[in-house]
Image 1 (cartoon, rainbow, N blue to C red):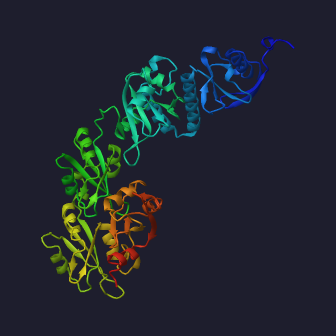
Image 2 (cartoon, helix red, strand yellow; image 1 turned 60 degrees about the horizontal axis):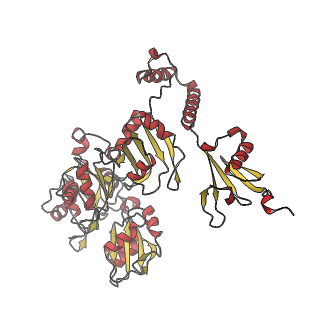
Image 3 (cartoon, rainbow, N blue to C red; image 1 turned 135 degrees about the vertical axis):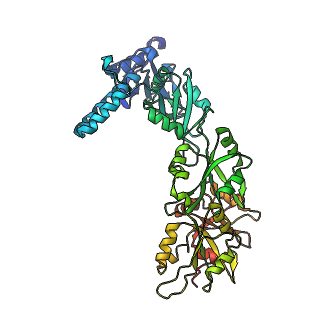
Length: 524
């Protein structure tokens, strides 16, 4: 038998993977150049040189992906991924953009000639000069990039490391509905050349996440991004809006301003749903970003007995919520504010309502009656001149008229007019019965507080609008504004507060009212 040193190594059966395509290889391997030869043989259309190529494989024992440095590590059946440095990514992306533009132009072939002419005129104004005589695209220079797929909790330092060597002017993080950084951001560079280089990093990894990178050449898009984002570089003058959640129902703009003292507040906007019902949230606009940053420190402080959650917002959300109008130029400013009352005695008169709101100037009182019987419905509406006066009315909630204590809710003119015009409708009359969505909590620790219950539901990013404790201390009821929030809260069933796991059950408002002593139906 020949000496072992003179025996050629047996061929190894393995697989090469490139751009999603896998091919089987059986080859003698002495050095990495043999792998390169195998790659060029199997993928002749994508030949590469050694300096541009790297080979990656999962280690057999520990199943960890590694970069091959020696063919001795290649085992039978190994799948070797080939990565080739591609300096033409930028050119490829530009070609794809050109193809997309051609498709759009083809789709617009049937466009109204007048519209097409206006579009062409606008493109000419935006910087395509006929005197240049070239065939350059009219999309304009790349002003920034948009990055998608960022890992959760990324920081400014992560972005600077990923784009190391490039001059970054701003990192504009796109925010989610809670004011936190989402997985997307705009990156603005100090020069167009840096932006072009950054585009070539499309598909590279930050941590374990592959990033998608798109060019931004529209000045309008970039301007909108600056209003709807937070600048992680710390110099964003637009970061002056905060969103507050968990406000008490009797909350007014003045109460929010007092909550923020000694910080100077520019404006407060209380948000309402499509039916005009107060959502327990507001937007606060500050005069500068530094003051807004200080406002964040008031997170989890109290207005009354309610803990307030504070998140960053944006000028875009402010514009969407307020309509971006000048309140001094709209007649809506002069419209009255409305409070709805429930649980009134049947003998209640307008004079009794005015007396109930003693020291609060009431503009008008409305007491709807059932047109079928002529009897009062047990409800009423009052109009006042300002949001502050409405807040004072709401503070009288659950005080008594005669032997009946009265519930008071924020309302609006549309709801009042609808109810006054449909007083005999059971749907209108019972609008507020079961208006909230309730959960029963069982298994609470003896020392459990309302704050601990509120913190428990923050795990699911929902906040109860009211919490009711039972005398035995081990159970409680919580109310949510929407059925969606109730379902989200229910997902925490058997989660823990301290060492105790908590059982959650959906219950009707009527059951809660009966157990804890709330008015169940004013018509009984």
